[in-house]
Length: 427
Image (cartoon, rainbow, N blue to C red; front, side):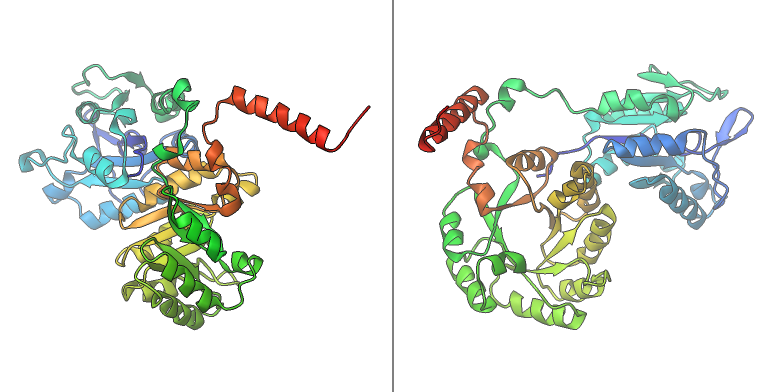
């Protein structure tokens, strides 16, 4: 199961956008294009997103129930707002008090629904609102609460954790509240491979090594690709693949298509799928011209072909691939975190956001692909990534995971001394 992540729940009118006041009480804006962002909101959202936080707008829109506004107008305005601020979701309660629903704030239904759908850790999350209903909903959901005091002539909230004049003022406080719990230094020094929840898939193309690794209880599946097969000297693709399937008949196995045209990709994927019930056909996210393979993925997924969509590097790619796989069988989405890191970018925010995007699709698993070091396995595990692919060479280092650093230091000194003696060096 993926680790739950913190979120910032944001009321809409009076927090993200200006609210029109009537007799000192705010009323919502519903016309598309009429939503005026409050000062500092755009930059505040950018900072919060950059720190890996989910941004979820939760808004009461009772005028829908009252018949004074159409739901289509509210949805259009919200879609525009979501795109502009990069919000991960906007949840709307369309009811009035008389409807006695569980989603109208101060009841916490919207927050709880978001937590269930997006995998949110409510205890590490924050509710930001400008009315007592917002603060009370956050309190009932178990979140920290921030009250944006706009000076309305109405009931004030009871004991919010923080009171401020705008979202931009509380970004540092939100980051403190939502930061990960302190690392248990003693436990961190005794990391054990057997305690990992991330599944390790071996990445290679040597049949003998695959057979040997299949007996290792830490290995949960296998992947390969044309580059690895070329390095291993594979020339008969189907013969190689069928040998692997015969040797490993129950673990997930991924074999990649190599055609560059869409018809060829689909034909090869269907042939690969015939090799075994545990086989996934790997489809690249684009062809070699950069054209997305959405049509191929849709066609295969809709007919029950299990897919591993590969070579992704952006959250937007994950989003459309997850949508394409939404109605199909179990599948994998491989984000090449190692290659992302090669460009000087931190891959962790991308991986966290990818998990969020995939949360509504529990039949899909995120793969941390192309790791560069053992630390990546620990990082993948800590963020709740489902799978990490590890090359055979890197797997050899798995035995030193959690090694005592004093012992490892001594081993390094002895290695240098041993190698110097072996080389016959003298001064």
